[in-house]
Image 1 (tube, rainbow, N blue to C red):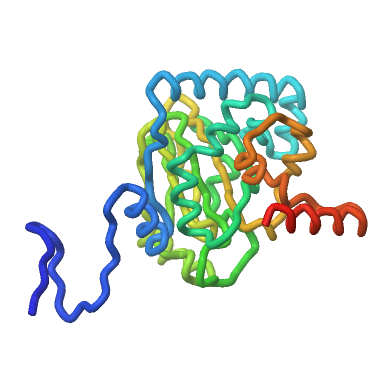
Image 2 (cartoon, helix red, strand yellow; image 1 turned 180 degrees about the vertical axis):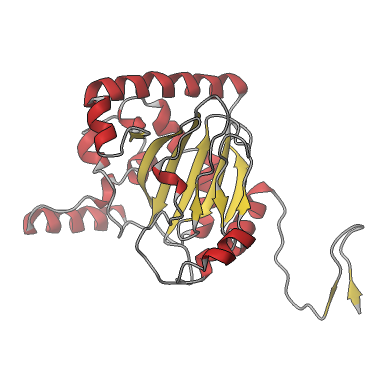
Length: 277
């Protein structure tokens, strides 16, 4: 018997189980689980996306001035803005975006934290470090039954083929080795997305930035969410200090999973966990 749920649905034969996707979160979860990537909207209004874009430019200029553009270029860091949330609370809110977290909590079983947040500029007419194929858990060649990390790349600008929208290798999070060059060229897909969207991926999906052939830089803010066992790129709680943050945001930023500095600290942390449970 051929089953068809609704007009225009994909028909099936001999199928006993089928995944259902009733909303945009379900669809994103299904695509990331199977293909390794998806696109969702942030839910931010147009004036909010414009405000974040202006804040990005302000922070990037201040970052270059603080750390020195020449020095950053010498260590290939001049296209990256590390941890913008340390300079403006608006980027903490971005990291805690409800649509993104709804997807992440469906894919990472149990607890997760924000491992890193980086502003990324794809420069007009230039090749930059992100243009090489990589995983956001680099140097790792294994396959896990469930994701250990999920990326959420916020599109400050519209992502188009012309301004260097990222290329991905679909389902590459399911294979240990990077495929051959011929395979990569033949089977890669380029992801276009509107400003205010998030391009989300399994952290083990191979991807790279495209070449920006326009006359304007293309801006983005990448987030990597991981299981707490993977250390943060930068110690966010140590950097922010005792900020007045919502309890859930504190947990997201890793306050609950700080490394004990002594046996006494470890025992106290165990005591605190027992009181929470």
